[in-house]
Image (cartoon, rainbow, N blue to C red; front, side, top):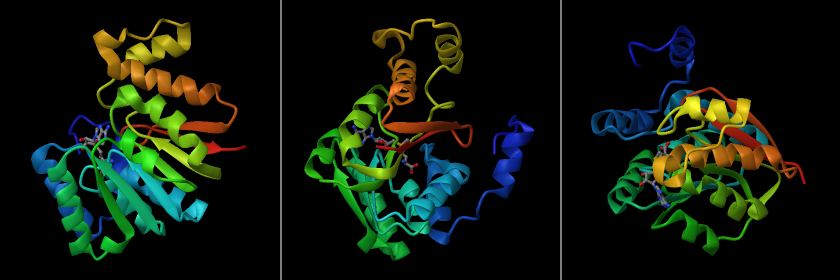
Length: 221
Ligand SMILES: C[S@@+](CC[C@H](N)C(=O)[O-])C[C@H]1O[C@@H](n2cnc3c(N)ncnc32)[C@H](O)[C@@H]1O
């Protein structure tokens, strides 16, 4: 935990669920290599959502070595389709799944998540969007028809990560324009995502300031 973290963040970190042995290994690898996993505080939300939706199938845009997937499985999900550009990360994910005894419940698609989703029919119970921030809104529009009514779409890095929160506040409070794509495409991508889900009657959305910030949307039509 960051020594400069606020009291609320320290409280959430101290009360987050314990890692399993495999998750602890993954978290250690993430620490050592600076890889951005979702962390146990947000992981607890993924686990809860899987439990509340009685999740069968989950699809992830951007899985790394499969840490976030383990939280869906801990919440009772039957199967998680993981997608990852980086072949080495995906290989680590396959190895972790074998070591952790859940290889039958995860599939790794190596390559562009936006292409992988085209190869899958719905329905999905939960979708996690955690890949390129510039493509969050596209991922949402592509996957929404494949999410069942009552299913959930979660997007990570809404309040922390590569985007500029001050710019997002200025946009949503005062209508300031989002940054140009060439200047700061990540902040623009997060702003467009939040704007898209807020204005879409097909979903109801809550932003949670946990971990790096989650946008949790449930499909209501
Ligand atoms: C934030 S990390 C994912 C972390 C993971 N969800 C977790 O919490 O354990 C984002 C990952 O998405 C991958 N990625 C980015 N864009 C992608 C794309 N279009 N298709 C597949 N993978 C992508 C990156 O290589 C990176 O490993």
